[in-house]
Image: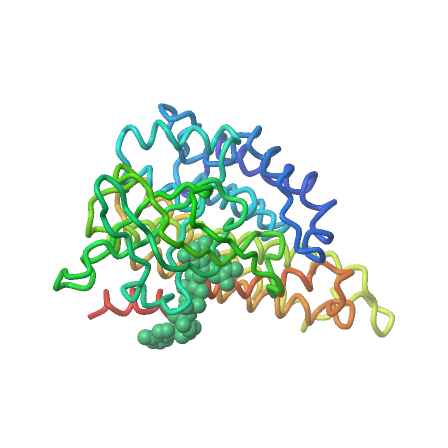
Length: 379
Ligand SMILES: Cc1cc2nc3c(=O)[nH]c(=O)nc-3n(C[C@H](O)[C@H](O)[C@H](O)COP(=O)(O)OP(=O)(O)OC[C@H]3O[C@@H](n4cnc5c(N)ncnc54)[C@H](O)[C@@H]3O)c2cc1C
């Protein structure tokens, strides 16, 4: 068993962290306060090769694995999760094109994402269907050589800034088996009949764009179908198996960032004439935080590595996402507590980390959905 990262992987980590320190730190507070999506950061990131780095060379990307995606995501999230999403979630949903798209679709869309010409979104959740994906109601009805789409999607990352989205629709409503009624369809964001509403007032990741999207008689050519008709649910579950390792990496990075800040703070802050760091009660808490982060990091790297080896393990992927999210919330709670009153005001970054962490237990399947996957494997 070799736990050592390659020199190239270490360089990627270093490059990503430097990018985040230089580009994220100066604007993170402002983007959080103003709920501003900084498109210019995405443009800069596209020049570094980080955006869509999983895209193979034949489609214009560097062709990294999902372990490399996790390593970059972790380092960016160490500085700011919302801005890490602006960069790493700019290709969200497009993994489906890579996994299931036709050669024409891959050649048409994937290069746009890595060249900074397009942003994608994955539109699955609906107002009445989140955890219960099969409860999706948005329909895509065939009319000649087009699909006509009607319905609405909720909480869509990049919803108002994307150029195209991969949408989960019901195409085979009469299919007896409920799981075989869905398909994934690529919809260009400027099609007639699409309305987008930016969702404001999020607790965290406020730099990331989130929207509700309504489809009213939106027509797309049938060639926009991704993969096979009636297989959308299964394709989506496979997609989540992969992307859960990325969310887990977000948790590892965010928690590490909170710990870094806390370690610095407790050495500066004095009570009773001594730095907080001198008290064993404080040291024990930092030790527990560091240990949990390391556990999450190891399980995340292992899960991402297995994806790259073609040894997909849905249970392990669910474990790393659920554990990492819960760990990040726990670590940020400790980090804020150790900052005392200063942790409670937004002058100090730890407050933003605390708010950002919670999403890791909710999106891409709430942690209960991951526990369902893990438990299913046990029986
Ligand atoms: C900021 C943000 C960004 C997002 N980005 C995207 C995106 O890009 N694309 C997209 O499609 N979606 C996105 N989502 C949606 C997200 O994936 C869903 O919110 C999530 O899957 C949970 O669905 P829900 O909100 O409908 O909760 P519900 O399904 O209503 O669940 C509510 C709670 O009940 C629990 N629960 C539900 N059923 C059970 C059960 N059977 N047993 C035990 N517990 C259960 C859930 O775990 C959850 O805690 C985003 C959400 C947010 C907040």
